[in-house]
Image (cartoon, helix red, strand yellow):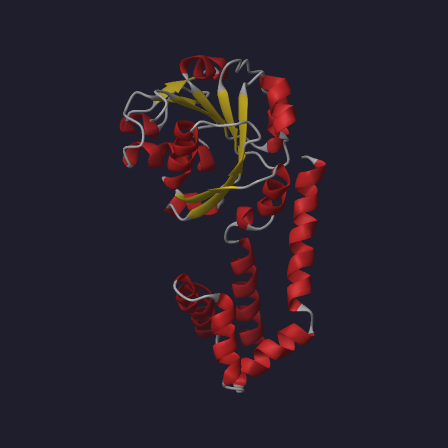
Length: 259
Protein backbone atom coordinates (compact mmCIF):
# COMPACT_ATOMS: atom_id res chain seq x y z
CA UNK A 1 0.00 0.00 0.00
CA UNK A 2 1.41 3.38 -1.01
CA UNK A 3 0.95 6.72 0.65
CA UNK A 4 -1.39 8.99 -1.23
CA UNK A 5 0.91 11.97 -1.62
CA UNK A 6 4.67 12.56 -1.82
CA UNK A 7 6.50 15.85 -1.61
CA UNK A 8 10.10 16.51 -2.66
CA UNK A 9 11.93 19.54 -1.32
CA UNK A 10 14.50 20.22 -4.02
CA UNK A 11 12.39 18.17 -6.41
CA UNK A 12 13.63 19.88 -9.54
CA UNK A 13 17.34 19.40 -8.78
CA UNK A 14 19.29 16.62 -10.49
CA UNK A 15 18.64 14.03 -7.77
CA UNK A 16 15.16 15.02 -6.69
CA UNK A 17 14.16 15.58 -10.30
CA UNK A 18 15.34 12.14 -11.39
CA UNK A 19 13.43 10.53 -8.53
CA UNK A 20 10.31 12.57 -9.31
CA UNK A 21 10.36 11.64 -12.97
CA UNK A 22 10.92 7.96 -12.18
CA UNK A 23 8.05 7.59 -9.69
CA UNK A 24 5.69 9.09 -12.23
CA UNK A 25 6.93 7.28 -15.33
CA UNK A 26 6.94 3.90 -13.60
CA UNK A 27 3.44 4.44 -12.27
CA UNK A 28 4.56 4.26 -8.66
CA UNK A 29 2.58 7.46 -8.02
CA UNK A 30 -0.40 8.71 -9.94
CA UNK A 31 -0.34 12.12 -11.57
CA UNK A 32 -1.36 14.80 -9.12
CA UNK A 33 0.00 12.95 -6.06
CA UNK A 34 3.52 14.37 -6.35
CA UNK A 35 4.38 17.84 -5.06
CA UNK A 36 7.70 19.53 -5.81
CA UNK A 37 9.20 22.76 -4.53
CA UNK A 38 10.43 25.11 -7.21
CA UNK A 39 11.14 28.80 -6.75
CA UNK A 40 9.68 29.83 -10.09
CA UNK A 41 6.71 27.48 -9.92
CA UNK A 42 7.49 26.29 -13.44
CA UNK A 43 9.40 23.21 -14.61
CA UNK A 44 9.16 20.59 -17.40
CA UNK A 45 8.13 17.99 -14.78
CA UNK A 46 4.72 19.66 -14.74
CA UNK A 47 4.08 17.99 -18.08
CA UNK A 48 4.37 14.62 -16.31
CA UNK A 49 1.68 15.56 -13.80
CA UNK A 50 3.78 16.82 -10.88
CA UNK A 51 2.39 19.70 -8.85
CA UNK A 52 4.91 22.56 -8.48
CA UNK A 53 4.72 24.86 -5.48
CA UNK A 54 6.91 27.86 -4.68
CA UNK A 55 6.75 27.43 -0.91
CA UNK A 56 8.54 24.51 0.79
CA UNK A 57 6.08 24.41 3.67
CA UNK A 58 3.19 24.17 1.23
CA UNK A 59 4.82 21.03 -0.20
CA UNK A 60 5.12 19.57 3.30
CA UNK A 61 1.50 20.41 4.14
CA UNK A 62 0.26 18.72 0.96
CA UNK A 63 2.26 15.54 1.46
CA UNK A 64 2.09 12.44 3.64
CA UNK A 65 5.77 11.67 3.03
CA UNK A 66 8.40 14.36 2.43
CA UNK A 67 11.74 13.80 0.69
CA UNK A 68 14.45 16.36 1.44
CA UNK A 69 16.80 16.49 -1.53
CA UNK A 70 19.00 19.54 -1.00
CA UNK A 71 22.70 19.98 -0.43
CA UNK A 72 23.64 19.22 3.20
CA UNK A 73 24.90 22.75 3.82
CA UNK A 74 21.51 24.13 2.70
CA UNK A 75 19.56 22.16 5.30
CA UNK A 76 20.13 24.73 8.05
CA UNK A 77 18.44 27.33 5.84
CA UNK A 78 15.22 25.33 5.62
CA UNK A 79 12.38 26.03 8.00
CA UNK A 80 9.99 23.10 7.84
CA UNK A 81 7.27 21.87 10.15
CA UNK A 82 6.84 18.19 9.29
CA UNK A 83 5.11 17.18 12.52
CA UNK A 84 3.29 13.88 12.05
CA UNK A 85 5.01 13.28 8.72
CA UNK A 86 7.52 10.76 7.47
CA UNK A 87 10.67 12.50 6.22
CA UNK A 88 13.15 10.81 3.90
CA UNK A 89 16.51 12.55 3.72
CA UNK A 90 18.86 12.26 0.75
CA UNK A 91 21.50 14.42 2.45
CA UNK A 92 24.93 13.10 3.35
CA UNK A 93 26.21 13.86 6.82
CA UNK A 94 22.97 15.13 8.37
CA UNK A 95 21.90 12.83 11.18
CA UNK A 96 18.41 11.50 11.75
CA UNK A 97 18.35 13.23 15.13
CA UNK A 98 19.21 16.60 13.57
CA UNK A 99 16.49 16.15 10.97
CA UNK A 100 13.89 15.15 13.55
CA UNK A 101 14.77 18.08 15.80
CA UNK A 102 14.66 20.58 12.95
CA UNK A 103 11.47 19.36 11.30
CA UNK A 104 9.47 17.65 14.05
CA UNK A 105 9.09 14.60 11.81
CA UNK A 106 7.61 11.53 13.45
CA UNK A 107 9.68 9.12 11.36
CA UNK A 108 13.02 9.90 9.70
CA UNK A 109 14.58 7.76 6.98
CA UNK A 110 18.11 8.45 5.76
CA UNK A 111 18.99 7.24 2.30
CA UNK A 112 21.91 7.71 -0.07
CA UNK A 113 21.26 7.27 -3.81
CA UNK A 114 23.97 8.08 -6.33
CA UNK A 115 24.29 9.76 -9.71
CA UNK A 116 23.10 6.61 -11.49
CA UNK A 117 19.55 7.64 -10.61
CA UNK A 118 19.74 9.45 -13.95
CA UNK A 119 19.80 6.06 -15.73
CA UNK A 120 17.81 4.26 -13.01
CA UNK A 121 20.77 2.12 -11.99
CA UNK A 122 21.45 3.55 -8.53
CA UNK A 123 22.05 1.42 -5.46
CA UNK A 124 20.32 3.15 -2.56
CA UNK A 125 20.98 2.06 1.03
CA UNK A 126 18.52 3.41 3.57
CA UNK A 127 18.08 3.34 7.34
CA UNK A 128 15.30 4.06 9.78
CA UNK A 129 15.67 3.54 13.52
CA UNK A 130 11.89 3.58 14.03
CA UNK A 131 9.74 0.52 13.65
CA UNK A 132 8.08 0.58 10.26
CA UNK A 133 4.98 -1.25 9.12
CA UNK A 134 5.38 -3.65 6.19
CA UNK A 135 3.50 -1.11 4.07
CA UNK A 136 5.96 1.64 5.01
CA UNK A 137 8.97 -0.57 4.19
CA UNK A 138 7.34 -1.48 0.88
CA UNK A 139 6.83 2.19 0.10
CA UNK A 140 10.47 3.15 0.73
CA UNK A 141 11.78 0.12 -1.15
CA UNK A 142 9.35 0.70 -3.99
CA UNK A 143 10.16 4.37 -4.34
CA UNK A 144 13.90 3.79 -4.54
CA UNK A 145 13.29 0.75 -6.71
CA UNK A 146 12.06 3.20 -9.34
CA UNK A 147 15.66 4.39 -9.77
CA UNK A 148 17.55 1.11 -9.30
CA UNK A 149 18.09 -1.19 -6.31
CA UNK A 150 17.60 -0.45 -2.61
CA UNK A 151 18.47 -2.15 0.68
CA UNK A 152 17.64 -1.31 4.28
CA UNK A 153 20.80 -1.22 6.41
CA UNK A 154 20.93 -1.93 10.15
CA UNK A 155 22.61 1.25 11.44
CA UNK A 156 22.97 4.90 10.60
CA UNK A 157 26.74 4.39 10.61
CA UNK A 158 26.28 2.18 7.56
CA UNK A 159 24.72 5.11 5.72
CA UNK A 160 27.74 7.29 6.54
CA UNK A 161 30.13 4.63 5.25
CA UNK A 162 28.09 3.86 2.15
CA UNK A 163 27.89 7.57 1.36
CA UNK A 164 31.58 7.22 0.48
CA UNK A 165 31.19 3.84 -1.25
CA UNK A 166 28.01 3.41 -3.29
CA UNK A 167 27.08 7.05 -2.77
CA UNK A 168 30.02 8.12 -4.91
CA UNK A 169 28.38 6.46 -7.91
CA UNK A 170 30.65 6.53 -10.96
CA UNK A 171 33.46 8.45 -9.25
CA UNK A 172 35.79 5.53 -8.49
CA UNK A 173 35.30 3.83 -11.89
CA UNK A 174 35.85 7.22 -13.54
CA UNK A 175 39.10 7.65 -11.62
CA UNK A 176 40.25 4.21 -12.73
CA UNK A 177 39.30 4.88 -16.35
CA UNK A 178 41.11 8.23 -16.37
CA UNK A 179 44.24 6.63 -14.90
CA UNK A 180 44.20 3.82 -17.46
CA UNK A 181 43.83 6.33 -20.27
CA UNK A 182 46.67 8.55 -19.08
CA UNK A 183 49.02 5.64 -18.51
CA UNK A 184 48.28 4.19 -21.95
CA UNK A 185 49.00 7.53 -23.60
CA UNK A 186 52.22 7.82 -21.58
CA UNK A 187 53.19 4.37 -22.90
CA UNK A 188 52.78 5.57 -26.50
CA UNK A 189 49.23 4.45 -27.30
CA UNK A 190 47.27 7.01 -29.39
CA UNK A 191 44.81 8.94 -27.23
CA UNK A 192 41.64 7.83 -29.03
CA UNK A 193 42.66 4.18 -28.79
CA UNK A 194 43.67 4.61 -25.14
CA UNK A 195 40.22 6.00 -24.42
CA UNK A 196 38.47 3.12 -26.19
CA UNK A 197 40.64 0.56 -24.40
CA UNK A 198 40.04 2.07 -20.97
CA UNK A 199 36.29 2.31 -21.59
CA UNK A 200 36.33 -1.31 -22.72
CA UNK A 201 37.81 -2.32 -19.37
CA UNK A 202 35.74 -0.14 -17.04
CA UNK A 203 32.39 -0.04 -18.82
CA UNK A 204 32.17 -3.08 -21.08
CA UNK A 205 34.24 -5.90 -19.59
CA UNK A 206 33.04 -5.13 -16.06
CA UNK A 207 29.54 -6.20 -17.08
CA UNK A 208 30.76 -9.76 -16.55
CA UNK A 209 30.50 -8.99 -12.83
CA UNK A 210 26.72 -8.82 -13.16
CA UNK A 211 26.66 -12.62 -13.23
CA UNK A 212 30.05 -13.61 -11.76
CA UNK A 213 31.36 -13.20 -8.21
CA UNK A 214 34.48 -10.98 -8.18
CA UNK A 215 36.62 -13.42 -6.19
CA UNK A 216 35.77 -16.26 -8.56
CA UNK A 217 36.63 -14.13 -11.57
CA UNK A 218 39.92 -12.97 -10.04
CA UNK A 219 40.90 -16.54 -9.14
CA UNK A 220 40.16 -17.70 -12.67
CA UNK A 221 42.22 -14.89 -14.22
CA UNK A 222 45.14 -15.43 -11.85
CA UNK A 223 45.17 -19.14 -12.67
CA UNK A 224 46.46 -18.37 -16.17
CA UNK A 225 49.64 -16.94 -14.61
CA UNK A 226 50.07 -14.56 -17.50
CA UNK A 227 49.77 -10.84 -18.22
CA UNK A 228 46.61 -10.28 -16.18
CA UNK A 229 47.92 -12.24 -13.21
CA UNK A 230 51.08 -10.17 -13.14
CA UNK A 231 49.17 -6.88 -13.33
CA UNK A 232 46.91 -7.97 -10.46
CA UNK A 233 49.86 -9.11 -8.38
CA UNK A 234 51.58 -5.77 -8.86
CA UNK A 235 48.48 -3.93 -7.59
CA UNK A 236 48.15 -6.24 -4.60
CA UNK A 237 51.83 -5.82 -3.72
CA UNK A 238 51.35 -2.03 -3.83
CA UNK A 239 48.51 -2.24 -1.29
CA UNK A 240 45.65 -1.58 -3.70
CA UNK A 241 42.93 -2.86 -1.35
CA UNK A 242 44.31 -0.87 1.57
CA UNK A 243 44.35 2.30 -0.53
CA UNK A 244 40.72 1.76 -1.52
CA UNK A 245 39.80 1.19 2.11
CA UNK A 246 41.62 4.33 3.19
CA UNK A 247 39.87 6.36 0.50
CA UNK A 248 36.39 5.18 1.47
CA UNK A 249 37.10 5.69 5.17
CA UNK A 250 38.28 9.24 4.46
CA UNK A 251 35.05 10.03 2.66
CA UNK A 252 32.96 8.36 5.36
CA UNK A 253 34.68 10.46 8.02
CA UNK A 254 33.35 13.59 6.34
CA UNK A 255 29.83 12.17 6.61
CA UNK A 256 30.35 11.18 10.26
CA UNK A 257 31.54 14.67 11.19
CA UNK A 258 28.53 16.23 9.54
CA UNK A 259 28.49 18.64 6.66
